[in-house]
Structure formats: C-alpha cells, structure tokens
Length: 129
Image (cartoon, rainbow, N blue to C red; front, top):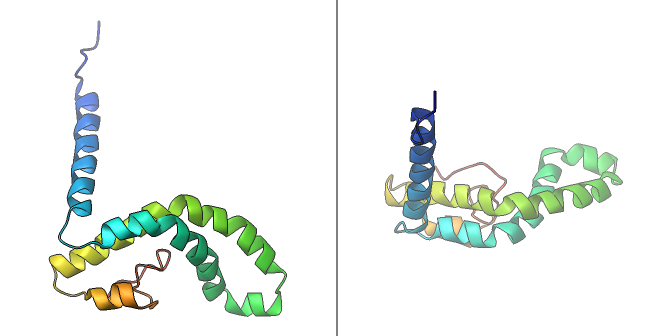
C-alpha cells in the first residue's frame, strides 16, 4: 500500500511549521520593537550576559574560586553567541506582549536599564511586573 503524499502526520507538521512562521512574523512586526531588537542584538548581548548570569547565580563560588572565570568565559561566551538571538527574540516578544496587549511594560525600563527585565539581559528570565 502506498502512502498518500499528504498523510495526516505530514499535514500536521506543515500546519505547525506554517503556524510557527506566521507567529514569528506577527511578533517581529508587532507594534513594539523589543522582539526585533532582541533578535538583532542577541548574539552580542548573549555573549556578555550568558557568562554574567552564570556569575550572578554562583557569585560565592566565583569569589572563592576565581580560576573558574576562564572556564566560564571560554564556554559560555560561545554559547551566548549561538543561542543569544533566539533568547533575545523570546525575551523581546514577551516584553512586546506585555507592552502591547497587557499594558504592563514600559519601554523605558526594557531598553533604558540593565535591570532583570532589560532586553539587554536575554538570559535573565524575569519580566516586568
């Protein structure tokens, strides 16, 4: 028996792919600009913020063992470069949703600070409250 070219599982994958592309296009073209900014600057901010976030979480260990810095930098800077655009886009999309649809965010805090909810800290998973 020959499977039809448009089997249900194949059709479902195409629908999911279309939905993902459509949602990404909507988020990038949303009224705010944090999604696009997070995506475009994600590699640079990720290279800075990934090792910084590891340090913030393990500050006591780094203070006691400063030799861990070399491993932190050599491993997490490349990880930040690679994953940064995606992490920045996701955090930017969340900030845009809070700004446009929930009326909870101000772009002054998202772009003008380095607080936990800043777009410049893509690896800090905190949103505005």
